[in-house]
Image 1: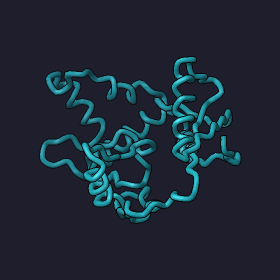
Image 2 (image 1 turned 30 degrees about the vertical axis):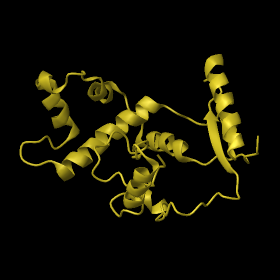
Image 3 (image 1 turned 135 degrees about the vertical axis):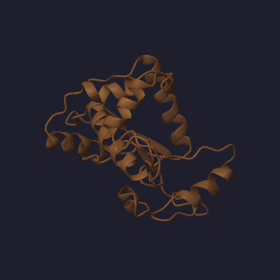
Length: 193
């Protein structure tokens, strides 16, 4: 999935920072049709502003090598098994004209659980305020209390709902900075590997 290609409008949110709808299909033809029907601008989802209408009949990269940045954080080194899989993928991708470019950035301030917990509380409240009817909970707090008091509704537990309850959120400006680091473009020039 490509962020901003398909609108998130109407999809139950987990995190506006990371939510990215995608298409899965049994055939390339079906995938193409669904993607062409769903991709494009939606005034209800500001992220789609960056997404032009697309036609998959065109081949935009036919004579241009495709480069993909592989972001790694210095403190998170992959296992040797994972490293071997990545190297094998890089070789196969290069034969197809796709180049995986390593991009290491120690300046990225990243706390996934904190960002997702904050987004979840905010996004669920916005979603429920917009779509809830009748006796349906209309805020994250009401949603949490409903599931807490109805064990049959949560066969997989309450971890996802309890995480934001126990998180200590920093100042909103810090959260904003954390979220922005996720969407920043690499500052280093990408070179063919």
